[in-house]
Image (cartoon, rainbow, N blue to C red; front, top):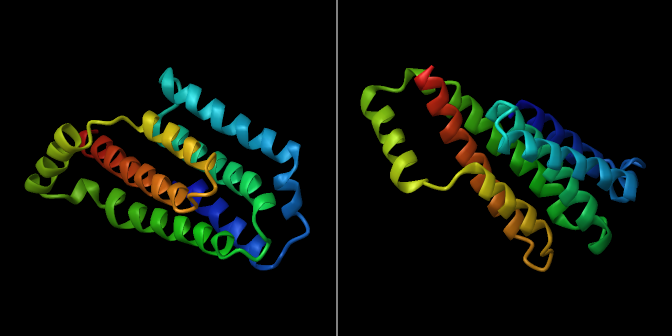
Length: 169
């Protein structure tokens, strides 16, 4: 999820510096761009025309922009969530990419079997329903921890799926 990491860090730096460009993300044009990214990536993933790593990365970027644009008008500009969540997403995605996905082909046979078992029996859900959960969590700002929790599940599911794709290739 390199693009998601970059956008998370970019958003965190814009919020930290109170950039004059932040209001554009909350306007109709910014929200339309975010919805377009989200819907195109979901459609591409659903019809399997876009590789999983690309549509999931694009969806995560669109969801991040949609979350910020939708929630910013409802909270004060100095709300801690706007400073913390983008940094958390960047660190989580970077750690998952570096520590899990990039090393997945070096997993021993037992670790690969465990990952396949988890994929088959514990994580039977597909990434698309998780994407719907992420979008639904954006719609309930009263439950402000629901979005980062749903996005965390999405990133972890991405890591599991991507690791197995690399192992099997």
